[in-house]
Image (cartoon, rainbow, N blue to C red):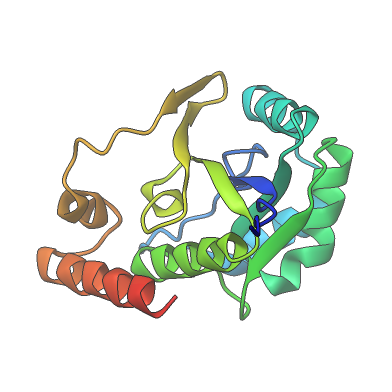
Length: 190
């Protein structure tokens, strides 16, 4: 009789507004100001959010691997390592968005869910922490913990329909259907 060795367990965390106190820069005309955020990230050491940093250390003490998925672009890798190190945040793996700008809305959902699927090929994801629904949509999330503010983490509730959640991300009802369809196709291909 053969027994499979169980996969190592992992807990997944978002970085901005989940582990690190982060500033976001929005243009007066709408949209995100990526150059200003990049400058801030490269020049600023930001403190960790005590409640989620404590959860991360607790998970690590229990023997779980820590994996970070961020929508920050690969170009901010060095400054992100510096910020995490200064905030005392250890990890086993960190995943960045490709390109020079962070994905948002539906693109962020696809990026984060496909990254979790890659981790899940070799790890059992038991929990995910994040501040946005983009951190929880798709498969391979484990127990979902939403960071509401710097001192409050609650179990993520999916009482709102998935369509409404996508619409809150800035999509339309027809756009929500496209994103949900893309997530379903992604799940079938992984």
